[in-house]
Length: 137
Ligand SMILES: [Fe+2]
Ligand SMILES: [Fe+2]
Image 1 (cartoon, helix red, strand yellow):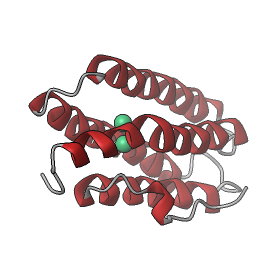
Image 2 (cartoon, rainbow, N blue to C red):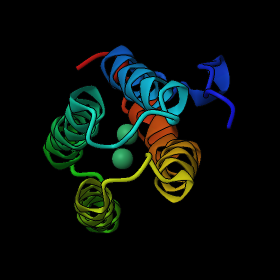
Image 3 (tube, protein in one colour):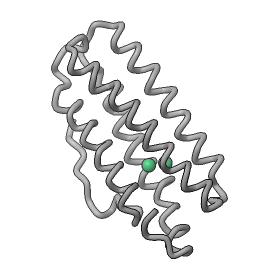
């Protein structure tokens, strides 16, 4: 599985969000690179936990600003975040209980969800904030 490389195509035009997305890619890349390690390795468990925690923190940032600027699709966007946390949490638990390697299913889910969510759902924030002339929070 290939690592995800950041490019300008992923930019939503606001540094704080872009930087958080980069960090999520970094965490994902650590997992992709260590996928041959066994899941009970402490590092893997820590990295998975970090992914959930950082994603949570990142979603809160986006939701805070969507609310602040009265983004019309707030509820829908928030629902996607919630589903991600729920699904990732379940996959992590199953993975850790299974005493196996990091399953490709988990990595594939994380990568495709993050890339799709950024390119489709988060990207809709770009014209919204641009229109309001907001370049920084
Ligand atoms: Fe989002
Ligand atoms: Fe995001």
